[in-house]
Length: 329
Ligand code: PMV
Image (cartoon, rainbow, N blue to C red):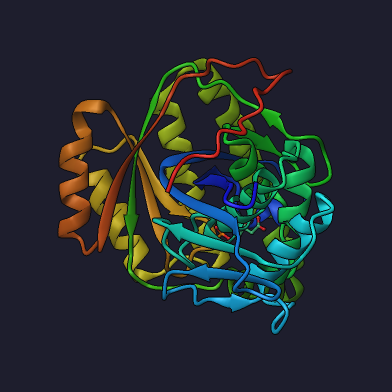
């Protein structure tokens, strides 16, 4: 038992339509990006008095006892509490290929991977709804007032139609999607972007609320396009959504340049994704256009372009398959 290893993993996510407005109760659509993942391994280790989370240099390691409010530590502690695990002699090692502060849900995926690894170590897997609620607690540290969309999509690992306060509805895309996920290389804290939108809304409530209502409408139509397999329509909705996000003030010259380059190279649509002001742009492309669009994104300044494929739906919306598959480091 003592040399047992607990494993956990979770994917990145991209918001297809609806970021920012989702914080105020409008619907949004997000998909998992399984090509980018966080993975964790948990072990019993007598060398650690308490609990330690070791991470690659970019996250930094953390002693849970010394910094209990640090997000990685808090994730470990919440999971231990949830599985009634003794918080001593436990070490968790985390790795992730998801860029940080870049709109792809890194914080939620890393938290979910840590929690799954600990639950696996103690032989007590956490049901998705419970895990998602626990990850939401960590999202509050990262974001302040998160909508809950990130924890939902990374924990369930399914395309989701999300509305704050309502049960998530899992979507089955009628056609597979090819998304080019392009990194501006500019770090952007979600908390700050969300705060800037809140200030804009306080200054001019009518204009911002109207913009958000439009974004919510695009998400609603996007759901129909996704479920009907109408990718050209989905692309047009993404273009419109980017325009609304520019109006909200969360785009940047780097994001606008990537979006314009993707469209010119034949993408069906392109937009910023996540909090904006840096981070990533996404472009939807036909399978044949994927390579030229990726090349255009690189030429327009993307630091990295990841091609992500989202499969057409195989699961029923009423019964999402529990995905406890922990993955391997
Ligand atoms: O930048 P990310 O990956 O944390 O996504 C943020 C999405 C927002 O809608 C801006 C905030 C939220 O809580 O939904």
